[in-house]
Image (cartoon, rainbow, N blue to C red):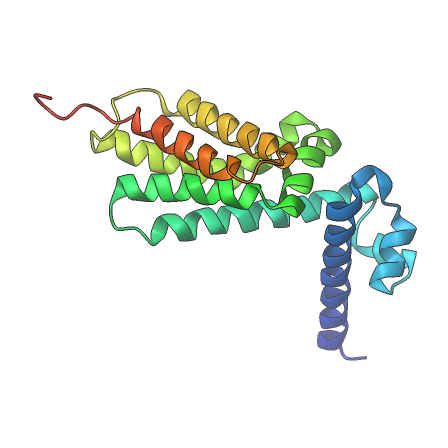
Amino acid sequence: MPHGTRTQQRERTRRTLLREGRRLFATAGYGAVGLSEVVRAAGVTKGALYHHFDSKAELFRAVLEEVQGEVGRRVAEAAEAEDDPWAELTAGCQAFLTAATDPDIQRIMLVDGPAVLGWNEWRALDEANSARHLGEALSALIEQGVIAPQPVAPLTRLLSGAMNEAALWLAASAEPGDLADTRAALSRMLEALRAAPPGG
């Protein structure tokens, strides 16, 4: 088998393992999924899985990275669709909240993620994706005088934590109006950050 074909085959196997791992982790939860179930669903051997991932935790970490990257892209796309910097921030935050209420994303990113990887590693992954975009947007708005001058790091973590907590609460909610109410509350919370106009 030519080298290029082998490389493509390995990549296909990895993608299949990630896809099936994600599906199983999302529906059953990390604790209920065994590697034998993943390899059966992927149609590969355990040896093939171990060629790519040393353990179930490593497979889960790769799935989580994929999910967080996907959410980060959704946030960035929503923000980049706006022309006004303030609208970019609010659109990005609302996009995060909406994405994080997807039950599959919620389970992997917010419920099992911190439990499986530990808080510090989970935070590092979050920082590389959604939190980074949020911090950049807040920094730009402070520089432009839209938000009053203040340290960006604590503000980023306060907002990020509030949105993560809201998404977890929405996961357990059966009330159809709760997402709209939460989005409205997020808008009011963000609006409170705006600096008063000069002379206002």
